[in-house]
Image (cartoon, rainbow, N blue to C red):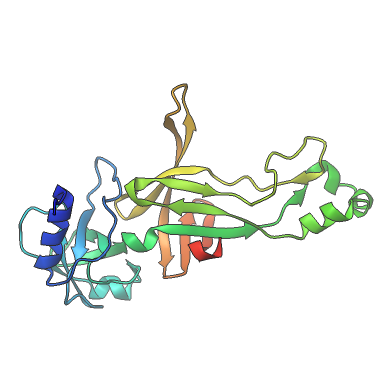
Length: 244
């Protein structure tokens, strides 16, 4: 059977960790050029106090070990360490044998959502009597939590999540104003932070970066994500593909 070069490398990585091959993203997230992040593959023996990993890209070296006890105490281990999963590691600047932060990048992949209600436009909300005269359909919409968010994929690709069956570009004459979320199309990791980038399409149909939010991870579990933006913490829940 013919194997592609990456398949051979992945098999060697997992064999060096002493584990069977398991499904994993084909590439690492794209990092900033000056990023000091270490990427690796979690090996058997990792726990709440140490991480044993193989560097990626794989250079044939033996697994490395770092103390993560202090990082765990400081809640700087984001995600759950599992053998074969990919991680982004920040080494402690004061002690090369310790890690100051671990991000399980595979736990970042998936759909992350939050809910937001539409609001009345300022002119409409000034007159409470007018709001009482809204059609029942609009009144119901004002009380409906609409789902927004983004999907993080391999190859550092992001995709915005929008409410279904709702026109985001409401008619100018409508008294309803819909939430306008960021349209992230790219994501990356840089020095322990998550970079979420909005893009626009050029004349050739290519995505051109126009703005990037640099956010810190506060929490990452199997079903919850909390990111710290400049204006505060924002929480997201994981949406499973089965729920679509």
